[in-house]
Image (spheres, rainbow, N blue to C red):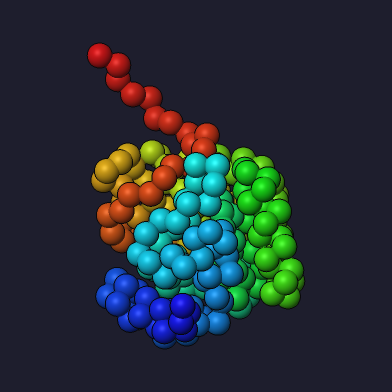
Length: 217
């Protein structure tokens, strides 16, 4: 398989057409090799527009969504980032390239161990991997300049807003299947947050996500 041609095709046919136009983000997709973060049995699917199985009932986000997240956060080299849900570690690596430091939380220990090995082989030194349940916040090292939730939530706990520094940004997918809303929330000034609805999508929920009170008939 010609991985470089497949990568080029992915960027041109999937990612550019999904309103990802930041050239720095597009260039980074050629630097961080997506196939290095794919389970070996699915490596040839690295550039297919699909969620790739990771095991334990979890899936890797499509590349176009990971690229869009990176673009919307507008990370700077001075930013500290919190990622809830390490998963394959691919988005972790992309975030690390664009920021000063990434703290990534993963509830499945095997995913965190696999990512540790991958990032060490690629000489990343600005990522802290933690094993734990971050679905309802992660106070350690807070506040952050940017927060990414890689699984959906039926409702966003207020604690994540408290984890944001002034001018900090948070990307989250909120709602119930099949109509979830990707949101970018910015801490614009003291105790004031602005929200932009970016697009509709449907991704798997974070384990142990906070649930709203629901009517039972």
